[in-house]
Image 1 (tube, chains in turn cyan, blue):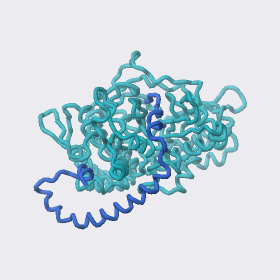
Image 2: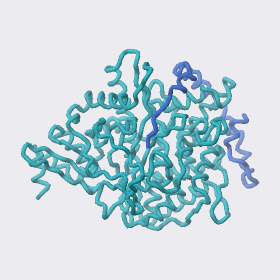
Image 3: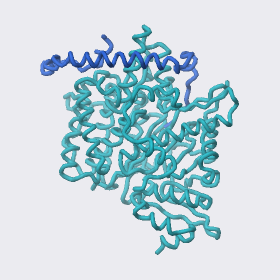
Image 4: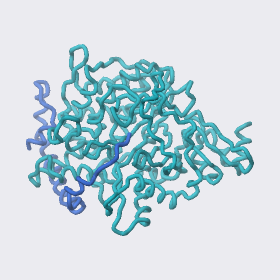
Length: 499
Length: 64
């Protein structure tokens, strides 16, 4: 049965410390985040720390708890903050990482993903006051350094626990590898083991090179298209959190919107067994890479019954199913009323991809980037392996407003700057992030620990009090807005919630 | 331009009717090219001055 699609996006940012011979990305990331907290959220650090008690990243959805699997090392001594907008901002694997608060639909995700960018931009400014004049921290919203190292942009989707995981795997693989035709952020060259970088002048995605398995628990090596991490941060009897690691970070708001919006719909349809056709690829990992390598968006991919299909055919079928599903059953399980607009945008994007991908140069990152780099290449008579094009590839993702190439090329915006500015400090009103963010704003100095599914208060008398937040859809402004307003102290709040 | 055409869909007999749309496309294509030329002029100011050094020094630790 379908459940409301509570959504979240976690982005690991690339980081460079210029003006030093021995840059340490962990220190730079820590300095970056601490600088932001000192300026913008003094009440939240160092006192409010991340509560790791309920984290279990090694639990596998397929039933095993793999001791040998490399669980991500949680460096508890590193900066790890919760913000008044309900987001988490922390150092992870030598990258600054920003996790949006829980959002109820794809539009809200775009607002909060952009708010994350604004926070990183402000962090760079704050950090510059703490660095030597010749030094500068620069942050990049991408997934690849061109040297074989990758870092992720992960999406999270709340799902009904009862949905058979096998269904999620089959339909998930089909959607995730074929949606690359509009979610890819573009990349010069290839980092596939065994290939020369120049063998593939340009491809659709940053991440396809790094995927090696169909299904698995890993996230830092042998990356799987479907990640089986089973850590719902919610009532585990009711919910699953599908943790998607296969996407690129997007600079285009439309691309982020489609990436998350279409996937929420597909997963809602999986829950309701409403997808009309199951696509079994002969070799999904290879297909993922073939799709990424094909700029004409019409490569034929092998299915395991001997027939062949194009990525765009799969996407068109899913889009048609989505329209029919919403007409019959409404939007509650597929990301709210916004889903209707997502389907419209999805359909028109696929139409353009059929006719001429260049029509999408103001909405799809890989096309916008290609158009820019190709024009520059022609003007200066360069080959694709020229360092200037690799540099522009990186600079597309530079977050500094005066340097970012993505900001200059006229990408379409779908959310207002006012909404983004508000989301820097205020949580969404329609998920449990509201409760978390508002408690932090009001009583940040009495909250000793926070994580996705609880807050721990120090009310001045022993013991510490933990408020569980096991329902992502509760703790909204409708549910708790007036209670929060009426209570002056956490003790009062606890009394009120108990009754 | 050979490279631009590279990412166009390969035509099938059923799609040959769309050839008639080309004159419209190339008009807006001229405008797109002019806009692009302006954009290339503009970004020249902000591009990394030493592309090779910049690309070489951009190394990240593997993340998730």
